[in-house]
Length: 127
Image (cartoon, rainbow, N blue to C red):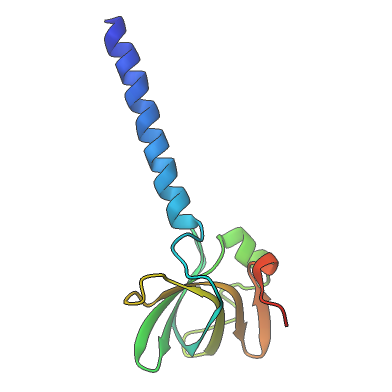
């Protein structure tokens, strides 16, 4: 009986560690390229929620997913669902996916209606 208890604890610990590693890999920057990328297009969808805010953008007929910061950080930067709407022109600056077949990027700065929102101000490229 004691063996099963120890095995159960070890299995639980392994599952927690694996889940944490997967979440870290997904939410980190390891999936992005070095160097900045700029995307311009029209917003087709806005989501301010967990695990992070996103914009879907039509850029020259291609559907892109622009990932921003977690909701609290995105809102703290001033970007809320009220500042942009579907159809607005957007410029996103950040890092694109290392998989260039994937139309996805992680934005550090988003510009809508002439207003700039730095969702990762510590990562914004120098002027």
